[in-house]
Length: 417
Image 1 (cartoon, rainbow, N blue to C red):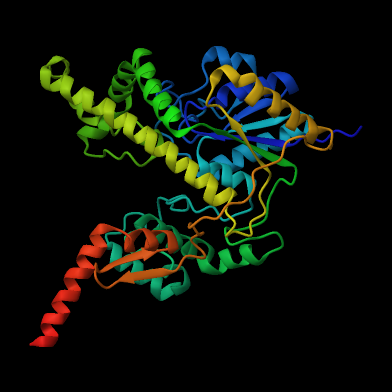
Image 2 (image 1 turned 60 degrees about the horizontal axis):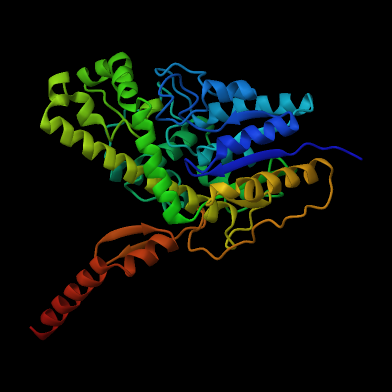
C-alpha cells in the first residue's frame, strides 16, 4: 500500500482544542508541529499568546515558537519562507507536518502561491513611503494616478494597504493590479490569487456552539489571570515597552506588541504600584479584563468569518483543500467527535484510501475577495464602501436610513422653494 503524507492544517478559535488535537496527531503519526501564530514566534508572553506549555512541547517537536526577540520584526513573508523550509524538510524525512493556526493570513501564505499583502510587509526602512507625511487621501490619489485598477478596490482610508500597493510598484516596477491579475489567471489561480501549493493537504476546523465558545473564552481569560497574566504583562512592559512609552513610540500594531491584551491593559500598565492597588486602579483592571474578554470573543468571530469566506464560499472559484469540521462543544465526547474522526481522516490520506468522512460543502456568502469587490459611494452619508458585504450592511443600517430620509426631506423642501 502506498504512503503519501498530507499537510495537516488545524484551525479554530482560541480555547477550541487546537493544541490538544495537534499533540494527539503528532503522537499517533510521529508528526511535528508548526505554529502559524504571528505572536508565538516571539520570546515571552507565553500566557497571553496561549503557547503550548513546556510540558506539551516535550511531547512532540514544535517549530516557530520562541524564535525571535521582541525587538525583531517578522512579516508574513518571513514566516512563509521559514515555514515552507520546515515543511519541505519534514516531507523529505517522511515526517507528518501539522500546522496549527493561528494567524489566518499566515495559513493562506502557506497554502497558496499568492503575492502576500500583509500591510507593510514590503516596506523597507529606506522606502520613500515608510515615513510619508502625505495624508490618506493624497496617498490614495498617488496610487490612483499610477495604478487606478488597484486604487479603485481600496478605501482611501486604508492607509497601510495603499502604502503596500505603492511599495510593490516601487520595488518591482510593476502595478500591483497587474501582478494580482497574473496570479488569478494562471493555472489553478482564482479571484483570491495564485494556485494551491500543496495538493495533498487537509484542513481540520475546530467548531463549537457559539454560546459555549463565548463562555469558554471568558473562562480562558480568567484562567490566564490566575496563571499570572498580569505579572507577565508587567514584567514584559518593564523590560521592553517602558522605554518605548517614554519615547512616545507606543505602537500596538507591530510585532509582539499587537498581541491581544497589551492594548487592553495599557492604562493599567501605566500605573505605579500604588495606583494599581487603589480603587481607581482596581476599576481600570476590571475594565481591562472585560475589554480583553470582549476582544477575544470578537476575534474568534472574525476567524470564523475568514474560514467561511476564504475556504467555504461558493462565490469563489478558488481551489481549496478539503475542510473537515470537528465539533468540540461537548468536551466529554472529545474522543468520539474529535480524536477518532481526525485520526481516521489522516490515515485515509496517508494510505490514499477512501475517506470515511465528508468534507464541508461550499456556502453562500456575501463576502468577496478584494480583487472582485466594487467601490460604492453613498450620497446620503457621503461615505465610500468596498465590496458587496460592506455595502449591503450599510444600506440596511439605521444610520443610513435616517440620513437618507433626512436628505430626501431636504431635497423636497428645495424643490418647493
